Image (cartoon, rainbow, N blue to C red):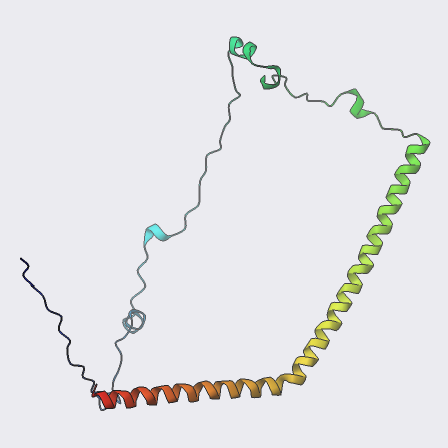
Length: 180
């Protein structure tokens, strides 16, 4: 057994615009306008203010393994316990003297890279000039077609406006017919 405890009710639709009050109607003032009129400052939340960030320096301690565990590790996994040398050693102090073929190869490579840099610089200059010419051409073409583009936009907006007006009139006529 069921007892129906609700029934859908459709209220009558009624629309009556009041146009007489719109001439002297004034909106409610915003908080900014009220604060300005009463010279009240904007309340500041101290939690929202910027503060300098203080970070402690992190210290990383060296990894210490027991000797028995280190002995059981494979060779590749053993930690490197050698300390870095302060001086680079005997070989780093001595100048590298190249043999004649090495000198020629080194000189040739320098010359090749110098020529490549010069070609790249010329290419960049030419690309910049080409882009500049292209931009001027595009600007001239845009200026040439600007009146036509403006007329086309005007036509499209006019069509859209007429379409909206037609739809609004249709809705108003339908509302008048149905009595809404």
